[in-house]
Length: 406
Image 1 (spheres, rainbow, N blue to C red):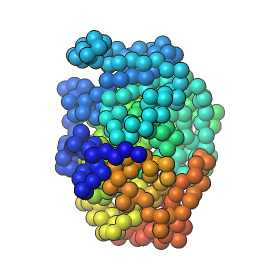
Image 2: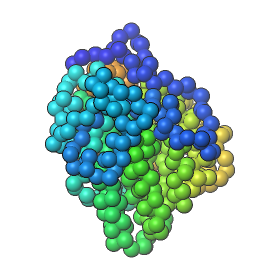
Image 3: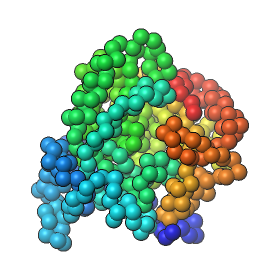
């Protein structure tokens, strides 16, 4: 398998040079003069030059909106003369694109593909399935894939050699399905670890809703829908601070879960994400904008110094978060799960990550909830590590309620 620039001499992976943010937290503007998604910073994250699209996706209002934005005023003309410099290729299926998912040469371009390629599809199977862990239900997602490049992400395990954002443009059908499902449940009769009062629906299982919002209004539409559903809450985890979401007016019906890890882990594993200090600093802004704000301590990666670094992170949370955030906060602790096929892909673009992710001596095979065969920390190792995380939270952030640990 080809190796990218991250393969030798301990150098940082090529992708860090493509998108190098300072680790210092940047303040969020309360009322940006222009949408963040039109800013140079957003363009560095996602500068689409190639679109693969199902014809049915192009025929939807959302598909037309996305293409108009990509080819609109201010975008330079491409070498092929197309407006906006965007090349459009129609495909039969968003899942079956041989030149994208089946091309092993894309591994060396793992992040450049994420930056410059977008897939548009129609989600035909609209199903809400039970979860009971982080959320009561997993809603049909409005996307699959991501412009960020976390080395442990489970989504690309099914896709092969490239994993850019796939957006589903039949958002009206997705929203209508969720609305029907919520109304069919009636009020929640008993509290559980997901929420004491509301049915919680994860709306971003296979993508990052904050990044999707750089391209279109799918995330805004879902937040608006839950605003009108008093018995339910939307929920999504994110590693990207997008100030545009501050204007969505969720009115307490959407839970944002900021994923946090020690800064050294973020620099090595969370390629192209917002710095962890910035994610933490955003919590109060999102709470004040009407979101419920929780934290995902995720993933916990066992490597030398992990306990010290998690203690420092928890102490930082305790030091900088205002009381109003702490009073409503809760956390999920999620230990690392990995996968052999993803391990092989990572060796082609970011092998340094595998020095800490791939630890056969401490890991064992695991059949995940979705049926996939993965690897996780051995049961005894995981049990002791989760117990230690609980001790660290009790010592350094005792206000942080543990809602879920896995």
